Every structure is written in structure tokens, then in C-alpha cells.
Image (cartoon, rainbow, N blue to C red; front, side, top):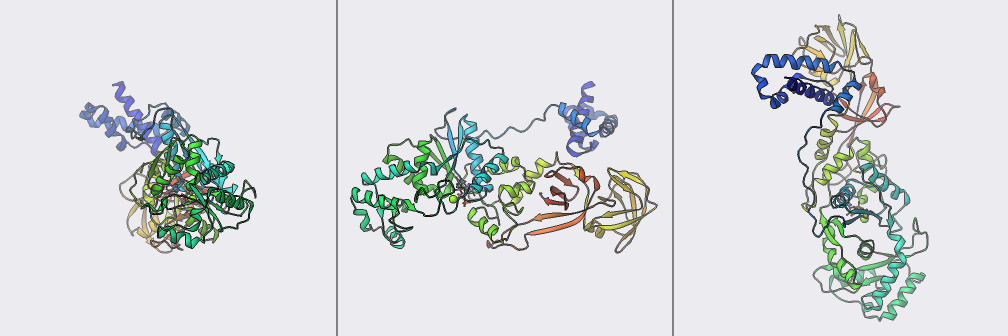
Length: 549
Ligand code: ATP
Ligand code: MG
């Protein structure tokens, strides 16, 4: 019978470790599963389990941790078998994550980065990190740092990064070669004429220029003889192509703002369509993943590589992550920050990584959430709840429990005995939450959790109750504090309305009292406020939490 005993002990330790307290009811099924015969004598089985639980519950926390660490790991369901990537060979796969440093990274970037990273890892290859910085108007070092910090927080190791803007002389050489070969031309038409021509499949006069004329115009562009918008380099594609991307797209344009790394060295910058294929090929990328809206641009990507007989990476697409009523794009997030609609890039209502971190969302939950979509191109629009429930599952076994009573109401307890719980000393009064107070009925007996029972006698601004024994009984069990510490909990909601407007009611604040022993937790720690939810300590002075899930 030694093994039955050790099974009971194992489950009791695990249960106590995960939930703060071992409960015989949670354990008995697991024990019977392992030892079906044990149910023949339920009475003695329950007696043993109850005794073992009592013993385990009496262990000091550190001892319990130690015991739990000694247990064999619980068997987990087999992980999904991973990605199936065409042309991927073990040991040779190179992927890349190419963010533009034009804002703080958000959960959409996490999706792309995790896919790049996980595929490389699965095939024993590597992921490159390339800052795609060819628009000096929008980019800055602050964003480069924020992106690196975000990736590190997610647990993605940082490779030595490269910068698209370090390859400018290369792009100039490639552009010149294309002009010499009659595959690109400098167009000085007005922007609206360019787009009309593309729409109507009509060439403009610039298309007929000779290689030499184009090179001379290009040199004028480089020297600053054209201003912004006065000249662009266009690919000589197919103006009648059904895929309108191929109708002589822009390869280079003039942007006069100084660049955050290159200063005023350059004024002619490659477009994404021109830069990405060339760098992917030069940097050795074997598999380039991008979001679905680039699918039509694949033809152009390969066409450019063909011009130079360059090695062609495999392109694959996945759907752009979008979450109901959330602005998952720098284009939408930036104005909210700049216009002061949110308190900063880490406002807990935002989908930025900084904000999710502040909200107590674990990187592992983000990973599981974004990878659950894999390479699917289905445009689903999940709500936050899917991520939050993932997060809850991960926090539940590890977050320490505390009492928090929002909108506190005082309860006077006649005959209340002096009793200590953690750092609270209860005597003849306690505070309970406003909603619990509301739900009480005169005459009912309830339990103040881990304290004793009280009978409700009168309700009003305060509640009058009387001590009603210590025995655990069925029925309502509510959290309470004595004295307590004033605190507030920020409760982020949907930042946008269904029509995409800013939702001014997107942040609620709960005020209340939490138990005194909360001072023992560290900044940034996530706790479970019982019957309220998981919250992350945001500030000690003033005492403030952010509601997580
Ligand atoms: P934004 O609209 O936020 O500016 P972006 O695509 O312009 O997005 P980049 O910095 O250029 O942002 O993107 C870096 C990588 O992250 C790209 O491969 C891009 O496809 C990917 N990415 C960006 N947003 C999402 C998203 N919502 N879902 C999945 N991948 C995304
Ligand atoms: Mg972009």
C-alpha cells in the first residue's frame, strides 16, 4: 500500500501548491484513477486523504515549494506537431523579422515574430532581425529600442540586428543597373497622373527615356535637383497586367527629412517592394513570411530577384492579427498616444507589448494565443477573451491569493472573537465588498472566509451581524479585511467602439481595500484577488493594480 499512500501525498502536494490549499474533494478522483481498487473502501480512503491534506496544509510555504519541486512533472498533452514548411530542410532555414522602427511593438508584431522565431527553431535554423528603416519621416532610435525590448520580454533571443538603411549604396547600384537594362525609369509626372496612368493602363512619356537619360535624371535625384514628390524611380513592369501591383510600381522615392541613423546622407530611399526582396536574398533568408495583404506583391518580389538572377526565398503568408475593438496597428495607436486619449504607449487598454505587460499578460499566453492561428489565412477577429483565458489558465496555479474588497462596507460583529489571519487581526468589525453587502439577507448565516461564521442582523450604511460559530458549513463564503490598505484597480476595457471610434468609457477604476499582507509582494507581481480576478501590482505608492483577467 506504500504506493497508494505516495499517490495521495503527491496529489495533495500538487493541489496545495497550485491552489494554496489541498482539498480532499479535488484529490480523491485522481487517486482513484491511479488506484481503482482503493474505491472499494471509500471511508478509509477519504479518512487517509483528509489526514494527508491536513498534514500538507500545515507545511510552511517554502517546505511545500520544495516538496512540489521534487514531484514528477504532470504529463502534458502532446504539443501540436509544429509547422510544415515547404522546402525547409533541417539546419538550413533562415527567417527574418523586419519591423519598421516607427512605433512601439504590438501584439500583431508578436504574431509575426513568434512565427519567424518558432519556424527557425523547429528546423534548427536562425531568425534574423532587420530594422526596415527607409522612411526617415517616421522612424527613431526610441522605437528600435522599444522593439528590441519587446522581443526580449517575449522570450525571443535577439540576434545581432541589421538595418535596411545600411545598404543604401547597394540599392543605388541595383537601381542603376535596372535603368541601364531598360527595366526601370525615372518618372517626373505628377502623382495623380501616375495613378491615373496605372488605372487606365496608359504609359507616361518618361517610360520611353533611354538608359542614359534615366541615369542622368537619377543622378539629379541624388544631388537634390528634384524636390520631394518631383521624381520617382519606377519598375518597368506591365501596364496592362491584371495584377495592378505590376503596373510600373515605385522602387525609389525622395524623402528629405533627416534620418535617425544616417542623418542627411541620403535623400532617395527604396520602397519596401524594392528593398525587401534584395535584402532577403543578400542576407541569406530562405523563408520570408508576411501578412496576407502582401500576397499580390509576391509577383513583383520574384520579378525583381529575376532581374538580377538572385536566389529566391520561399514566400508564405498568414492573416494579419486583429482583435475586436482594438487598434492593432501603429497607424491607429500613434494618434491615440499623440492626442492624449491614452496615458502613453503602456496604457493598459492598448495592444502594445508594453501595455500587455503592464496588464499582467504573460509572454507565454501571448505566444500560445498568436501561434494558435499558425499560417491560417482566415480573417477571424477574436476578442480579448481568448487571450485572457489563456492567461488565466497560466496564472491560476502560480498567483498567490489575497483578499480585496471593492466599494467596502463596514460590518459590525457582535461577540466577534479576536482572531488573526495572515496580517489581519479581526475582532468586532470587518470590511466586506459592496456587492457582497448588497447580496446579504437578514437572518442568513455566512462565513467570513478563513475566519468564522456570522449571522446578519441588520443592513444599512453598515451591516450588523453577530458571531455564529467556527465550524465550516455550506453556504456563502465571502472575503473580508480588517483595517486594510486603500487601493485602486484599473480595469481596461475595449478602447474602440464597434465603429472604430475612441471609446471614452474604456477605463473603469475600482476602489477598495486589500489585505495588509499585500505589502509583501514585489512591483510587477501578479496576484489573485479571490472572487475578483488576477491583478498586477502597478504601483506601491499610491497602491494601484491593473486588472488582468
Ligand atoms: P503597422 O500597421 O502596425 O505599422 P506594419 O505591418 O506596418 O504594421 P511593420 O513594423 O512593418 O508593421 O511590421 C513588421 C512585421 O510585423 C511585418 O512582417 C508585418 O507583416 C508584421 N505585422 C505587423 N502587424 C501585424 C499584425 N497585426 N498581425 C500579424 N503580423 C503583423
Ligand atoms: Mg509599416
